[in-house]
Length: 519
Image (tube, rainbow, N blue to C red; front, side, top):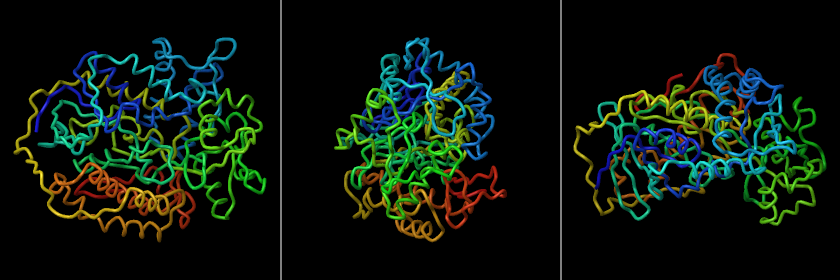
């Protein structure tokens, strides 16, 4: 098995990964790994925009307050202050570097409104293609010194003497490799693909969370998975996301009986926080009713939302009927690998940024369009921090390297990906309760022997099987967190504990290998 060394290894291919790599590549040797191709990530799918207090009528303090309200005061206030205060200047820096955001007829930035925001502060690019446009621009800008390795999955972290010094990888052709670096950065996105209904790319299964946990890193806030209210429903399948910006421009939710479902539920109506809207739709579905997004009040829908229009047409949904069938789906993970504001984890040499990280910026429920801003702000914070650190070129393992064998030890019996997703959606989805969570924990826990023995059996597993084991392990941790938090806060809703509990205010649930759970 070959070994290679670089200054920095970045795992992931989305906005956080490439921004961090781009910043660092001017000073360091950087390698980027992605388990699919460089365009297969959530950033390319992001329809919504980037939030920033740019308008003269807006302030970072207002954005700060909106973020705390959406996050149910579970946020880390310093992280939120950095996000909202640094965001506008970094956005302007992107614009000055050539990134083009949508403008009005007068050449001014066109600012949109989205749920739970008090001002119009959302920048878009290409209408509903903000993530795609940002990524294409970034690929055109990224330094040629950055090596991007596609179809190569990181399957374990190398840790010795409490320091992470490298990764093991498995290529799609079965080739295994080992790489060493002074700094290892996870920027892999969240865990939406653990659920059957999701806006996420199918590759975003939370695998990096399990990798970090197995290496000894602390995970936190795993009970907080945000469900986006409006996924386009085609039969029993999800075709894609309908951006919250559609409701920001005047669309509203109705059921198949013609009743507006958000009337009287929340002062902001259809622009209420995502968890509230998702539960309202879920309630309608529980009553056997279908839910639609009525777009009759949205001017120039086809021009304003070209990607959504194409998605509807490709799936036989006629825009002219003005009713788009919707269902909630897993969208954004507020939990993740615990970090400070610089991306430092509890393991020396290992860092995390973007959705895979949890520095507390989103609290219990992410404010719309804060995710791309998070990537922009905290990628810069991480890069600047690493540039102040000494490069460790001689970090080498003290133990013998693992030997790999070609034969399979035993028959492995694992559930399918669809089975895992179905169980997570049913029992750890929009509405949770003790009985369902215990049933989920028992079901997932039946496979515990596989993740307990993964170090020994990994060499006989296929890439698909390795991912399934990691999916099972992180599902177990999510379900355990959801069972432990006996209240409802933000995206975490317990039907048996439906109210906020002051005793849980600012309390976090931590997971660490061998330490397990601390509250």
